[in-house]
Length: 638
Image (cartoon, rainbow, N blue to C red):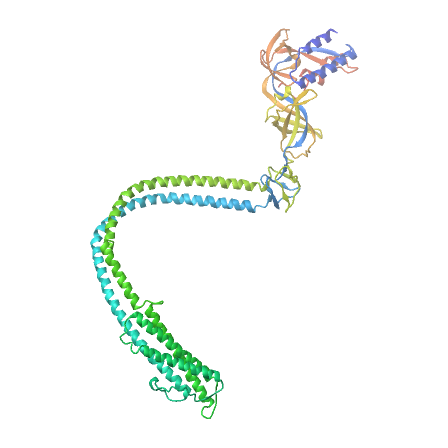
């Protein structure tokens, strides 16, 4: 029983720092203590041995169980109210990050984007125009000064010429008045001649009509019969009466006119001559009416012994010509009167009036000092004022252009911001893949009207089967050693003979308390693999939290601890304090206190089988060797 007590004291001196190390030692103690207690000292043997301090690799790991989930699994929906216009993917399709999956009707947002683009373009062009034109405007302002100086010189030189022009214009205006007066007089004389000719033509037409009706020779008005005798047979008595009345009306009108105006040869007054033409127009209108009624009356003539059909047709043809002459004469007299009174034409009187007005205007301008020469003098004064002001305007132009360019730059920046906002709004009308993955389900189709709030239940479900994570639950003792980016080895229950690699991807610092135990979730992302890994599979994960290469190590069974201090016992039984580093549960790093090659005492646990010889009991088997090395065959000193 002394050996057992020694063993117990030795074991008590070993204080594991990790949960897994403690569990391992507890299992060893429980197993061997039970074995020793059950078999007796004859069949169990616990002995000490001397081991050599050597260099080796050591790593600290944390093990835990976890479950697989899809890291990238999302429900995608539109953030915009609208009608689905296109669906570009289907369930089961593989898509790449940013692939367009579906879109709403973008007619309005596209129009908004286009409007914003045009607005930006317009602002940009305006800015370029301002920048390009600023130098030109400054040069223009400078040239304006020089141009004003040149204009002053020209004005001083042109003033005498303008004065001569004014005198010449007055002389020309006086001469024009005389010419227009002569033209008016000649026009009036021509008008009188035309009026006298028109009276003679009217008498001829009356005689021609009378000859057609009476069948006689032409008789001048001075000797014309007062009786209205028709020389042919007719069928319409009413038209005969109308023709007779028209004859008397025309004859009386012509006689009255001649009585009223026995002579118009010396009538030069425009108003009086206009009255003559007006009265003559009325006379000719009566004659024209007489010609038209006569022409209609001839249409009722019937053949007789004296007048055959051919004779009647000849009369009609003659009467048609007479009627046409009457109409032409009427138009001619009307035209003469229109010309005289200025209705739509520039008459000689109007030309004279205009010439007189022009002369009066020039004389008033000359008198009041508003001729072109006077204007030139005032222009010289204005140019002197302009010369002074344009020097000031040059500076103002420079300042104004700078302000305009800066303002336009601000406008362009604002419109670019508006364009970006409209483009960002356009993105709300699209659903794009957030990562490489597979479409699992699409809840809507083209034509569906979708909401943009939390009540919308139509989604595109997407996942990435190549991005898997194993979620672990670690206690507060282990979690402090875990860092993102640490490598991990993963063994799945479904594939116990294969070990996959991974990396710590996320540490959830929110505590999870269950039955009084606080733990934290850690996500380990699997490296890409061709193995079939499904959501929900369980796995054992070993995370390497620290490692040292080629350092001094000693078995944990060779360590004794007193509080925070660690000791080893040398071959001669001396106790040596050492400084330790990391441990993997079997071996511990030695930082200082003992040298490589030193021999130290450790514990040898052997469990001989039934029937084992004494020699076999003294020769450690593979299990004993494993225990001597710290309880694991994964890390050995080199």
